[in-house]
Picture (cartoon, rainbow, N blue to C red):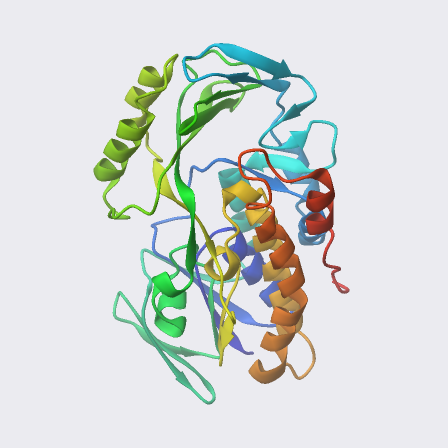
Length: 370
């Protein structure tokens, strides 16, 4: 049985582990965090990605876990309501469409439960060194263990360590989109009832919406900025940057920033995309954000992760698959789908992609037989 080491226990990594096992591989997942990561904003599953969820046996469960917003309201920088809608929200589009919006942590929990007995999991560890040989990849883990795998797959996000080790510096592949974003959870001190609220000025904005039967809210805050020199591990520095750049907003912003200080799941990063000439090198490949992050501005990151993982596993699962054939076929199939979805983030900044572009991107790839 061939072995695959997957770096990252997010949507892409867990989906890949499930489908590699289905195709007869022995997957191992290494994750720097001590467990599958909690927190995160609501994400969307659309188009062909719904077929992946269905084939994974999670479509019904995902539908039951979906958010159930009644609509949204837009407010100016002082907190004054400008307009409202009961037909759509900015995060999920029209409320009567067939897409699924659910919390990222709910989806990863479902995928982990489906995969935990089918793969080996190494939490609290990461890849330190990769050395490719003709017949495998020698890996040294940060914890000291040394092992050899037939393939190594980076499913470790925007700041992928596998990408850095196998493809070169992060600066060669990241394209900054001119803004930064933070996500965290807090108590529903706004008493929102299945309602999404946006506050926006020329340089900063945020969205809040209730989850867990209106008992808490998820907040997504962002501001316009060129690339910032900040430490990705220094949460206090990140919180200070966010507070400084959001201070011009009125309304409930001060209370929200106060809640940010004690949030258990604070996340902050640049809005950026990953663009690469190739996502594969020898027996190493990238999937999801690690290889082709489209940014949250596209609304398609989760769908790209699900579909990319499924297609990669499908190609590796073909009879007599080897690195010279399976990995190029994965790239060939995914390139048009990735290009259309990445374009959604830059097509019409500040106003979102057109329905025509979103439809094209959602349906730009066809899955093979399960």
